[in-house]
Amino acid sequence: MALPIHLAGTHWETLHPPLLEAGCYAVDPEPYGPPWRQPDEVGAREAAKRGRFAPFGALSDGPSGTVLLAPGDMRGTGLIMERTGGYCMGIDGRDGPNLACLSCDLPVGTRMDDCGCWQVVRLVPQAVVRLPAPPERPVMEWAELLATGALRHRLSDYGDIPAGAALAQVVVAAGGAPVEAAPGPVAELLGRALGSLLPAGEAALRLDLAGPGFGEPAADLALVPVHPQTGDLWQPRTGTVPGPVLVPMDAALWADLAFPPHRTRLPMVGGLPAGVERDDPLPPHPQYPVQPSMEAFRYTLARMPAVAEPWLRTIYDRGC
Image (cartoon, rainbow, N blue to C red; front, side, top):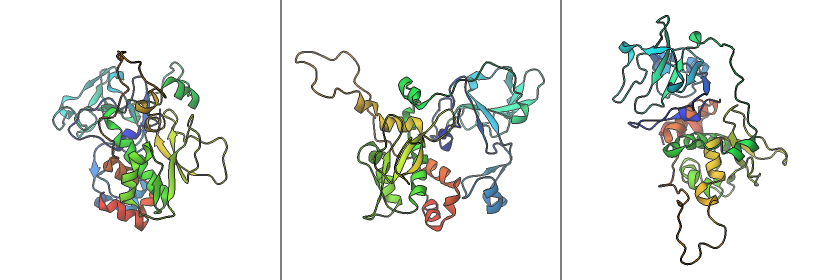
């Protein structure tokens, strides 16, 4: 499956669920693991070669292409007890590979499950050997993803992370111009943040949703879903030329905006007859409005070459 956007951030001192569903794997192209180096040690040119265009935490000199799995999918490994350091609730991987093969005792990967960490195992790419196996899960078409509910990834309390990543994509796509979010879920999620990051003006670019089962409203910028299996951006079948600029968004968050459960499951007209009491749960309503994660916003911007532009670097350096 595509690398989950949730890697863009975490919630501090909170136990997180597994990053990936059981039976899935993803590959992280970025280096990961110790030794870690500070940006001033590496230099801007070397950092850019690694895909980091603005300082954001330490840079890893670990291996690239680690294979990510859910911890429960691991077999035939055991913990290296001398490498199980963490903050307070588990292991955070600070000591490097902490899983060893039970057959040869060689380190093969790193398990992380501490607070503020997505629960995941990162396998060292050199330790992974691809063997014959049953066919991989077929790639689902967009219509099938919608019909089966596969776009809903149970974001729960972590919707602010993909929202922050989407906010960064919108700001870059706008090129410094003012943006007006379409009324409704888009404005509720991103409108306030966009108003604080970008200038106001009459010639604002309109931001709206577009995608499978939703249509293609008239807009300058269109938030469209990223396929959860392939990482491909949804593409409109037809449209005017040049058409809106397509802005990638996590598919689960996109589905929650395009087809919000607490809005689409209510009856369109009327209500219960007098004297009849409801005996099923009410549709789920968010406890509080989701605000984009600024950590995920900066994480995403730091990995985009556009952040080197002066106007955008100013926004980035403010810390927002």
